[in-house]
Image 1 (cartoon, rainbow, N blue to C red):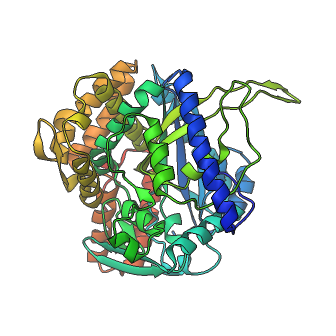
Image 2 (image 1 turned 90 degrees about the vertical axis):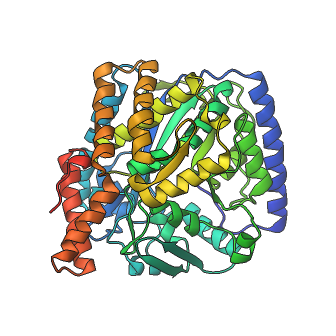
Image 3 (image 1 turned 180 degrees about the horizontal axis):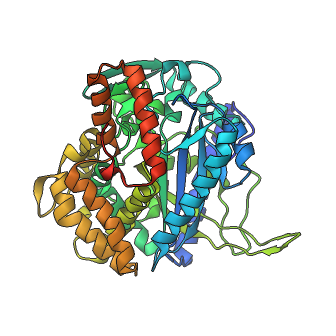
Length: 500
């Protein structure tokens, strides 16, 4: 939802015109998809949301100062003033592409962190910063500059009609009323993009949905919210509840939530855009001057893309019309063709660069394997089972049990070790990833599975030790975040981190 908007309130007639434009845009998209080829070149991309943390391990709401110090357009604001986002250039995964991603990502973060320190903050890749508390979310200063953020906040609150209740049961229970969408800003993620052809979009999205549970169990890194121990990946319920436009009555009636796993397997990308328009009223019904087509003939569909950015699927469909050729002082920037992508949005940020690239290797490799073989789990289990797996794994992480065709109900660690990790390794071979590169990242994932230690379990165990030593919760959290930062910068994968 990086598109800027001009307004924060909209009239009834504006909403009517916007809905009509969306319906017309959907027809345009279908016509264009039916008559166009998409290369599906398989290029991959990555977006990484980061927390800003001060020297006492508390959130540092300094993103404007930090971005000025970094001075790189690849880094942008995020919803909260204590967040920024890195948009990494796309690349090819084949051969040594994953190693290139790791080296590039590390270099970008090291350089940015060095400059951020001058502005009074360090960069942390962590799903939810454990030291964030209710006071950080209660004032007016949490939200970033930019009309789109305040407009989104106002739109969700207007649709909901009351304060936002965050209510989560885990090892501890949290019930917290927020007067705005500030809790959403606490959730920082790594978003993976995979370019696909039109024909392959349906199978790729189905595969991504099928593996969502094991994927989040393996990568969980957000066990705390507002100082309470909740789910292994607490980002999932926090984000879903913080961006929920439904009041309790609509939720009880079964109206679909804005943050949505989905409800069915699909045939193609059109299915998802149809659902977006059929089920979700526009939050930001702003008409754009971006009409017509690109030089390559792709419809721009600005309103459809803005609306898609306010429906928060864990695997989001992306139609990118590409860019026209631009001339500037340094020469000519080439036109970029239209493409289709699956945006995988369920992973937390962190803990280290190597862990994040290993998580990417798992996703890209396993999706490739499932789409390229006869396994097709989406044809052998119900969508409801995939959804249950997802929430079970978000809640319990590596201690979860899941259902998988051919294995039945099985501990997720056993399924990963016996089947999904070897399958992902085979998928990386199909993607022409060099053997030593694939082995390197699969060893990181195997280490997590066999030790039972990902970011969530390391934080939970570390917090327990600090509290057993007599430290109060707040002091223990700050100590734990400081220790996390040392290991994160050290770069060793999380399954090797010692407990203090």
